Length: 447
Image 1 (cartoon, rainbow, N blue to C red):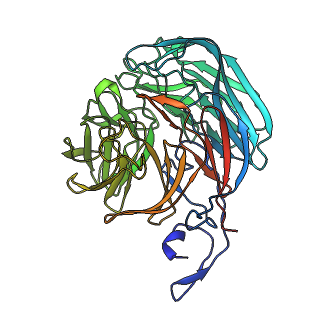
Image 2 (cartoon, rainbow, N blue to C red):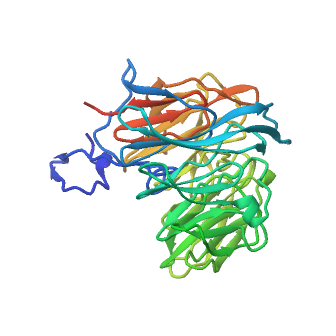
Image 3 (tube, helix red, strand yellow):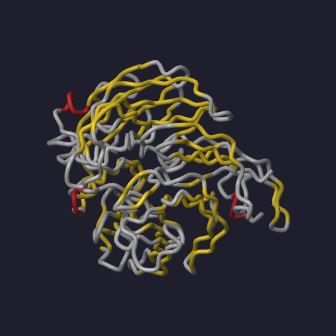
């Protein structure tokens, strides 16, 4: 095993001639893109590559509609889905479908997949692409938080699913659900919970995580789709909000604005999280909208370094790119390929369809793969829209396939093809992967 695979492991490590002995470590996946929301999977003791005969399936359990990825903590897997009862579901980016049904949060035993409890509530849909909730559950200690596609924000007990508090973003703040539904995965930090709401002075709202009471509201902005994140730059903790008119930095304690840089993605699709490496932040959205931001080292200010034009940078839609060692890796919504970009100037280093549609040579509209780095290494998991879990080595030099395993069938429709558009969870040396019919636990251990 190479040392790079285990950088960041907090247990004691004895290094001898660049080789070492170390106990394996396990971790949870407490929300969207992992515990630290950075798209890094930090467990050890997993496979170095996908074997030719595939990976072992631990269990499969039925679920219903949902783009929301699973979350894993306290020996439980949390799955958020939608059970349709009536109405005609169709996918049209320009119009809303009307459905009647229930949104459901289900807690499963992580080892067996057996149901522990389920919380459901009536939730009529009037959104485009009505295939269930978008937001991955957020787990914080004894509580789990969910935000439904129509703006139902709820806090439940992890142990038994008992409802602690609930808010309706539409009712309580007088906003309409955006056409693709509410998608801003709730962020818990300290004693507050943050999510995008929308409207004058309430683009983002901070709630008391224990009571649901509003602590502050801030930002004149439309709802947007991007989850907020917290970084430290310029010696200051900053709440980063990518909204439909730009990227803003706020004081997490009171919503005071530090800086705002204009960026207007097409169709108001501010979706992917701005990703930071050092003092640079890459912000990507669809078509031709992408910028690199320079964060000041000494104070909470920022400026634009460069912007990405067509055939430059990578223009992501629903899969957040990763920014590692000066290189940005992401799937491009224009050509649908996986792209590596030089962070210095936005030039493309290489492209490949191996992660999205291996038999493609020219174009796949909104081709998607969800990218997760394995520790502090150059190996990555890529969950392809085809239902394949891929392991690959990514670097400036190119893409090296380390094997793939077909986990489940693509069940959602997009531009005339079937896709899986749900981010996996990685925990317990297991990948938890769902589509609109089942959730599958895939063994990743090297035992």
